[in-house]
Amino acid sequence: MTTTALVVDDEVDLCRLMQITLTKMGIKSDVAYTLSQAKSYWQDNDYDFCLTDLKLPDGSGLELVKHISASSSKPIAVITAHGSMDLAIEALKLGAFDFVNKPLELPRLRQLVENALKVIQQDLTAKSTPQRSPEQQMLDERLIGDSAVMHPLKNTILKLARSQAPVFLSGASGTGKEVVARLIHDLSPRRDGSFVPVNCGAIPSELMESEFFGHKKGSFTGAVADKQGLFQQANGGTLFLDEVADLPLAMQVKLLRAIQEKTVRAIGDTKEVPVDIRILSATHKDLNQLVQTGLFRQDLYYRINVIELKLPTLNARRDDIPVLATHFLALIAEEWQLESKPLLTAEACLRLQQHDFAGNVRELRNVLERAVTLAETSTIDISHLGLSDLNVHQQAHMPQKINEDNASDSIENIDKDDREPSSIKSVSTQQAKANLHPYRTMTHHYAAVKQSSISGTISDSSSSAIGIEQQSVTAMAERAESVNKNANSDKTDSVANLDSSIDGNIDILNSIAIKSSVSGQLPAQGLEHYLQEQERQLIITALKQTGWNKTQAAELLGTTFRSLRYRMTKLEIAEDQAE
Ligand SMILES: Nc1ncnc2c1ncn2[C@@H]1O[C@H](COP(=O)(O)OP(=O)(O)OP(=O)(O)O)[C@@H](O)[C@H]1O
Image (cartoon, rainbow, N blue to C red):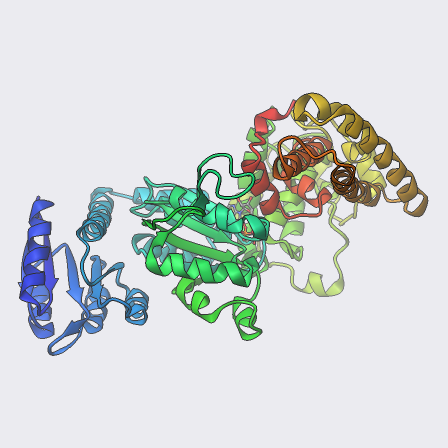
């Protein structure tokens, strides 16, 4: 079946050029020169998509965007005069799926049309699929939740995936902003390109420009080879600017320019390179407030926040907790290679629904990981959750009814004895530690490994794997031990001791770096390489300490999960390095 398009512009030559381009791509097209003509052609014909100028003799192309988006889901793209970014943004907000600037650049036009063709193809597949479309299936499998707030959210995600508009994902930490960003990419016409997530808060400011835009060999000390930046890595795909609020102001200017011009210039390069990327961004901070206080540029905010998608907290969708819990328990069973899937008792499920999840879905997963670790069998009861007693206020907000499917699911395979206690008990740390069971087969127990001394681990992971001079390692171990001793005399909590010993080690590493430079012993491969090796070593140490649990390791290192994951990728620390 031939694809058909409506081209709307009052410039005859431009229409001709567009028609030739479309014909070469196998698309039949009609031309309308005015807004009223366009409306009437669209009414009388079944076009697959529309390409319209914004400035028409009898009105604005924005009106056509509104008209078409109100009655159909067919893609409509707009042509804007160079520099009229405000109108392009307005069109995207009204439902245009993309825009192209005048003077028309044919490669860009072809790219836009190709994206439109992918959206059309996706719609055809959806129509020919009797039940749920593949897109809907992917969404339901990866974004768990069926509560009232999730339905409109999922519909919006499906719509946004078709568009090329920049989307800003807001919402508290752990609500699933990255999950949604990945979905928008994987459901979009860009899905064959790369999804490149970048934690803006995790990149040292002096390396930011090189990370984003790349560098040429020799452009600065340490630039030993040409390096491609994140923008180029995301070319043809999606760049996800996570924790975008943490971008330093100087970098915000450079980023804005790259986003607007759709070109980047690597450090040390003389030429600009065009890039075709879609920008998604997220932060748990109040970006609007940061704009008010001058910490975030208004123009960049306006550019990345064309469409805002706010993710609900887990407390706002407690009905989803049973299904999320079932999902995570299945994941844990698979990842930890458990013999049988852990199941929640009905009481435990209810207790989870009453908990105040400040950390949202991520916290739920953590609670379940801990519970599976503590459980003696595959049955997870309230006592394994380690949640504190409910106060009167929380009890008053108990859900009336939990999802019955999940409740019955959760109580299968449970002995009578297991169901008996319905009173809510809190698990003290001591009790939790004593309650260890080898149910969790593939990983070390967190509470147990946390107590081991960091200095020993540093010694055994260092010289062979990391290649640090033995002298430094020994010095580090000795200093770490003394830091530990000092810390032990002040504090009794083992976690606090470990945290401080890690801080201590970071200090030690810094002081070693400073010392060696003061005494003239500079690292052979340069400071950057040296510091990266130290960073790598500390991360591996923390990961070992926690049985390669990234969330716990991030906690130990006093950083965020996201930042740790970013650093692991950057330093090429693979999961399979776990022994
Ligand atoms: N609806 C969901 N369905 C399945 N898993 C989810 C959902 N929401 C969040 N998760 C899981 O919760 C964890 C946190 O999600 P994610 O990293 O996307 O949150 P975030 O909002 O980006 O957090 P932060 O602001 O801290 O970066 C991940 O393990 C993710 O897979």
